[in-house]
Image 1 (cartoon, rainbow, N blue to C red):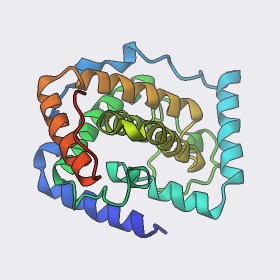
Image 2: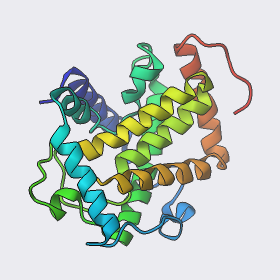
Image 3: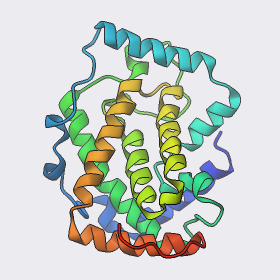
Image 4: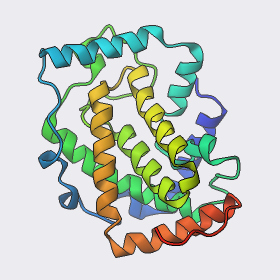
Length: 238
């Protein structure tokens, strides 16, 4: 079962989806053609190759060793929402305090989601629990494509942008992004190379976004809101 944060995040996501119909359809900042990951990412390990077998062994080891606390944490991290980073950013990092930032990161997620889905359709990698049905997953997950990880992509999209807004927390933000991604391996729904692919994907998407003037105007507005909510002085420059 989901913990308090999981339930709260579910309600927030539902409310945001109702609030802005634009998130459900057309790209908000960038289109998939502006970040064609099929031409950038290395392909995942070929099925039955030594690298693929090592990838599967890593998933099996993570699944077999997971604790109750790890399961609860991985289930809460099943939600792709920037406020999962509140454990790094602090108790004031909430959607109630940051209404513009909530919308801003949802737009980032939606654009990235389309790009990732397009890339997954290109590589067509099966998920770990499809490759090995003995793997018991702990989140609801369709048997769709696995590479690159959407969760890992969003984790690094968020960590990079938050670190640019609040460089005082850069190290912890990137550690949290790595944890966010690893929880997908613990959940049995991604291979470690899917997570690495997501890290690269999130970096490429953010680099594209950071060269878009419209995006940058919203980024600056979100940065001001975040730093004010955290009680930090205004920062100059990106």
